[in-house]
Length: 222
Image (cartoon, rainbow, N blue to C red; front, side):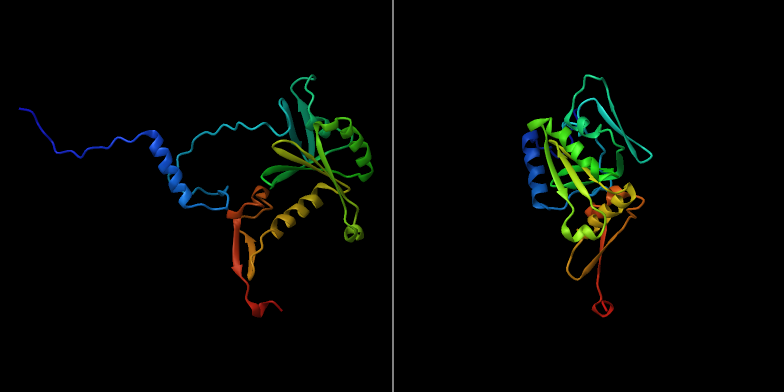
């Protein structure tokens, strides 16, 4: 005797319709704040391996390592010619900081050279590359002349920016960048503090999810 069960029917929905519904759900919670780096939005979010289709920041076959505080540039073969590699392989000692920030949607890697008189020689090498490279130079403002003179040379690639600061040391530059990142935390009537110590986790210096705002008591301003 056949057995008939009263089972609820499952509707058939195309994958295209599911994709549209997913986009509509995410569009309803539109926000300008980027996803945090220190936590997940969902408790049981599935971790899926991600493969980036973007080009590597220093060119194909080129690796930049940090040995102590110094930057070590290596190429897979001697035939590799890269704009970024030509910039990094100057004759002077080059230091690489242990943090990078985001500027206009691009990752910024920070390097340091302690001698400002090397700027002219380095710019001459960059000019030999012609239009293959976009370079900007930022000199110290007049009000900054009370301290040491600094020059920033920025090399713009398609997906990253290389910032080389002349006339300082890695420790001073690191502290300057951390102060600059914290100065961006500005809400009227509130004070922005970091949740995780950026001295231990410098990569969280510009992460919005790592900021806690506390209301300022007007009585304590004096």
